[in-house]
Length: 227
Ligand SMILES: NC(=O)C1=CN([C@@H]2O[C@H](COP(=O)(O)OP(=O)(O)OC[C@H]3O[C@@H](n4cnc5c(N)ncnc54)[C@H](OP(=O)(O)O)[C@@H]3O)[C@@H](O)[C@H]2O)C=CC1
Ligand SMILES: O=C(O)[C@@H]1CCC=N1
Figure 1: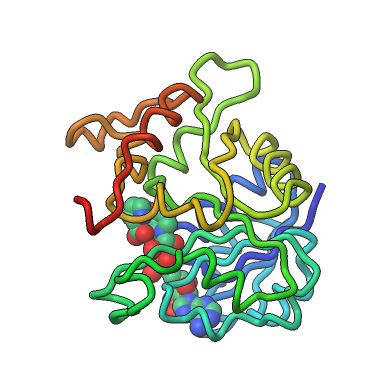
Figure 2 (figure 1 turned 30 degrees about the vertical axis):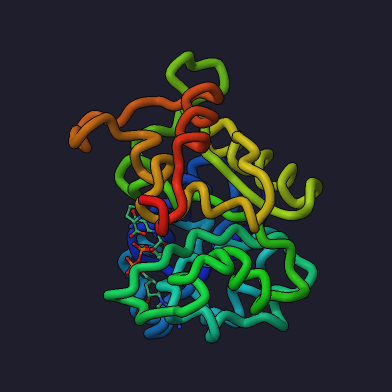
């Protein structure tokens, strides 16, 4: 059992919290409005979950998840997350987050920006390319032939192994998609984004992805300037 500190309690944060509880872990979860606003979620999650401030969730985390809009990146408590493995779900939506020149020019990736802010953490891009409802419903036991695979990226193998172990505990296999620099291949709107789990427009029936499918999708991904 691991204490998972989750900053962001929206679609993805609450979904990961539920999966973590079902996987036997403890959860400390935060949003921007304060722990008292998370009472309903905590009631649903049960006694192994508690609400906290973002700073407290970071402090309590043995393993952390940051899952807020990219525009809130600067608020993430770097000091309390130092030395920890941090799963980063952030995507860049300019209409929500504002224009970010380095992302528009593709001179960096969102996860490199997260790593730059959380300079002393071990950032692993995780969960960013799967729709939260699919993440909630596609978890399967290890032995299930329909188990699906999630793509991660990061610059440090030990941190990636830690994340793969956690994903296994919540019902997913892992595909190593390379470094944070290479993670543009599954950023927003690439072939390997949500299309890894969705065929055409059929969002009602997500499909399990294996390593071969993921490899093909990553190979198909293009830079925005070449789309
Ligand atoms: N929706 C999806 O299917 C997926 C989303 N993503 C990405 O993951 C991130 C989260 O997405 P999603 O869960 O949909 O977003 P939501 O809008 O549903 O939730 C965002 C959460 O972040 C919290 N938050 C915002 N600002 C801060 C802050 N400064 N400090 C602490 N908490 C804060 C919000 O708290 P409050 O409500 O109190 O403001 C809320 O709990 C985004 O970057 C998104 O692009 C990745 C994969 C899939
Ligand atoms: O970041 C998001 O909000 C989107 C939705 C599906 C995957 N990511």
